[in-house]
Length: 264
Image 1 (tube, rainbow, N blue to C red):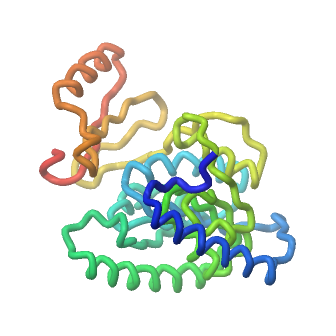
Image 2: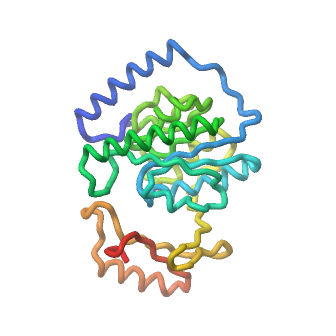
Image 3: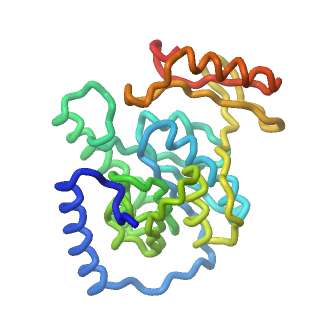
């Protein structure tokens, strides 16, 4: 089993070294035992791209069901904030644009300074909110575990596969089960409350402010997102057309998502 989901050997060495020193630090200054009683403010985090945040919304109804009086915040990249903007189960949004996964045309040095600026702003906001529980839902590097730790959130849950695992109060190693991403989220939620093993479904009661189209909440539908940030992941247009023709025979509403004129 691989501890880190990294291919670059130099990055792997650096992350291993950082985690070693962090583990020593945590052992010297180990936190007190944490109680779940009275925990009301929960921060979810996934600063990756739109598709990742769409999948991450699958945990929202389950958390709200377990903690009906809770206030839920979401830490995302600014480009993905549209997914949780005006979401009925999200009470607050914080944004961080990490230089490594920023797809804007900015030069690298500008991306780095933007990261520092948004990081400091988000950290100030999160500290002010005084969250009780934080769940980092991203399993690759970069995650936000160090930010959750610096914000002094008492209970920090997440995967160790993206590094900074020693800073979590409840770390989980990534075990490749060849399952859909949201099924791994169940492992994180089980730390907080009982939940059966399942593939969680994205929860998007969303109305598009441009087209005024909203996704139904009372029936099944299909969402097709035919684009990708990497050309190697792009499926040929004729393949999409063939798939859509087959799906249309099921008489289930089909919705298309995308961003920008090219994807339109």
